[in-house]
Amino acid sequence: MRDHRRYYFFLFLLVLAGVLAVLTVLRHQPFLRGSVGDILVVPLMVFFMLIFVRLRAAIASGLGFAIAVLVECAQYIHLADRLGLPRHGFLHQLLGNTFSFQDIAMYAIGAVFCCMVILFRERTSGKAARLRA
Image 1 (tube, rainbow, N blue to C red):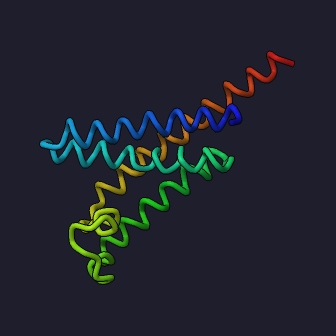
Image 2 (image 1 turned 180 degrees about the horizontal axis):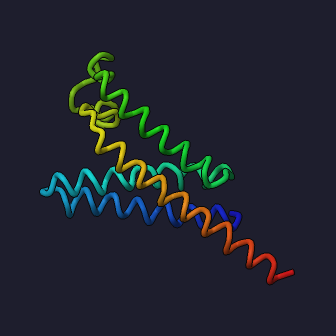
């Protein structure tokens, strides 16, 4: 596995652990669970994508944000209900059912976080390559 893939795989696992911690530890605190969970959704998607495809920071973060906003828009039009998905089924839970502008703001925070992490990685790996040369 290449160095950048290992890095993003590690970050993916770290964020996944964070998501699982939020789902279990903060399960009785709906505001925190929703907010922190929504912030972590975008990095989870972006770091997973970066394991397989190299993308620039802005493109990767923007793509993760766009996917999250599309899912939020699907919630606005109640897509899961329109498709007749079972109420407590996996796909219904994945699409969700409640639209919120606050969720979009949390996705934006997650996207900015991703962009900063990726830029940090690019800068530090560039310095390391120059030092090796």
